[in-house]
Length: 172
Image 1 (cartoon, helix red, strand yellow):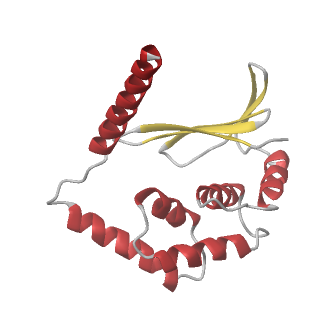
Image 2 (cartoon, rainbow, N blue to C red):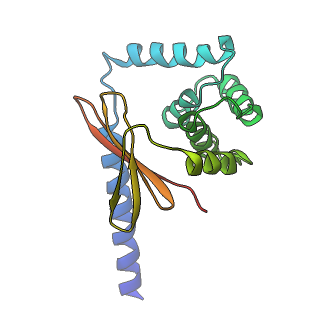
């Protein structure tokens, strides 16, 4: 019994310590907070004045915590109702991620994205790597590579401050 209690206390201590470390790495210095608040307000206000719903803004609102809940609700419903016919695969993937991050069912947008990705043909080169076919395409300068593998896509973005690798897996 004492051993179980000790293990439980150790687990709780580790969870508390982890959450404290996570919060401290995401703090904004108080001198910079007005700038961050201004950018967030500008971003949220752009939702109401825009005729094209931007999924990147919804993802940012979900990550930062929306101040304007009405703008967040409006953008979520606009993305849910949006027509996917004119969207690129990248725009459609962002829409699926934004709706998923909002705990909303992206509906038929996933199957549309899957179809677009299956029918995609690269503009630059095709090679074979590892377990299946890998396709690469030309991208803006900060994107170092995009690869299509069986069952998913991986891309790598590098900026002066960071390097990010993202894998999007779409169930077949």
